[in-house]
Image 1 (tube, one colour):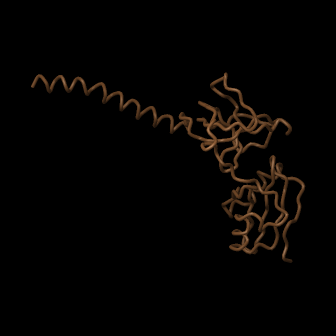
Image 2: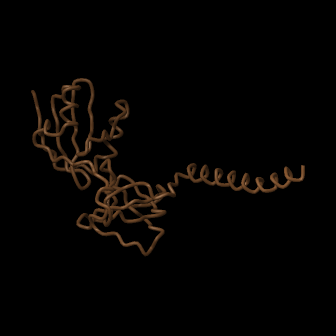
Image 3: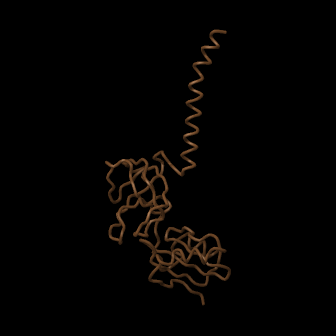
Length: 204
């Protein structure tokens, strides 16, 4: 009986510690916080664009602007491979307009092993749309009659017109306006970032 009481008091602190940890993790998730350095990216120096500085390009081609890095001793440099944790922020004003979103970097470390470095999706500067596998697949599926390329952020984007609907894709093959019913509002949101239209495909 005495042994059971001792075991109870030994286990009790572990229970509360575990419970506290679970609550903390849940709270972090609710706040949109990724505390562990598990997101891979490549640092890009975009200081040649108006209002832009360093960005972190993640594997799907999105570019995230670090508004703050908690480790103020960590120095970003162009082409650097990193693992980082982040908190997404929305109450900041940026004049760059090349970023997909703005984040506060909660932890960061450099990747020095080549085999662990992330492979970022290629940004396709297309004159022949079928050169990109994702575009060729889209054309086969939706049979578009016109494709227009735009300068977009620090790369390109493609407005694809078919008889049924319009599509707007980044140069990495990401659909920026997947909801057909919201297409007009979605395009208006990106309109100020689009310039220099070039028609690269037409079957009319």
